[in-house]
Length: 323
Image (cartoon, rainbow, N blue to C red; front, side, top):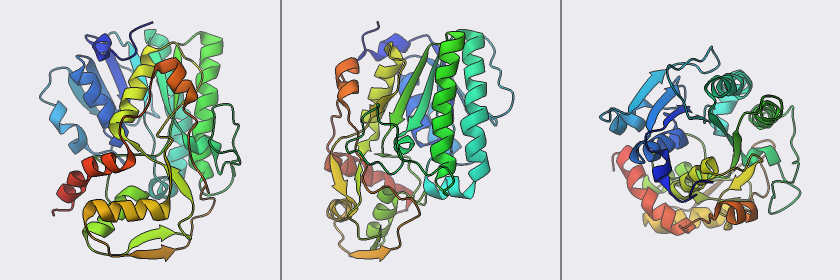
């Protein structure tokens, strides 16, 4: 096995990143290029932005292809890694594009696995904590099967990812594809869209504009938020490992939405208060990863506390909001 903390292991390798212009995909592309890899990012830019990878275009080792990964997928030459981050990932987006979300989870994963099989490449699926639905177990270990409403409005994302996991492991068992599955818990950091509907950008935007922060329900529901640099480190360690079963990557520090809103107001330095709003259908009551598996098999733990990550993220939101 490679040294799991050694990004130099990616030097001179070719990685294809599906959804490479999105929030997380662009951070993966950046880390791989900085590690010396050749990176081909493929993204149809529905929710991704070319601006997220503009800084990489000066590298001869990076290219961005505007393409829908649910169509036939072919890349010339050797490919060592196929990393599938292609999917709308916020409720605003997957409720706006429910059919596309299902298609990219199913057909996009199928095409990515086909490319990995043709090239003899490692395939990584960016799955999600949403496979656990509204969990009845807290924290959630990888052995928990979840509590998902398959026909509710959130089901298009939850079930797309659950199917993608099943398909990925079917390819592993039937075709011997070397696969990795990361279950990503709530992540935040630079390159998030202020209007993507998730709590961190919504709270930052409101606090910076001195408007009450929009909290769903009574704010007692919990989330566990991981700073993006920690997540990327965990994913790269997983890619270099030989772990083929799902692995949770996230920060086990659990906070209520009211606590998050108060912390963001403190970080911003504005305290415009809270505006309570109705909770979305099937909004999870709790969300916290059991990261024992990542700690034991990958030697990974998050380095940044919630507040540290928020302080590192603040300049990004000031920039994109023109403040």
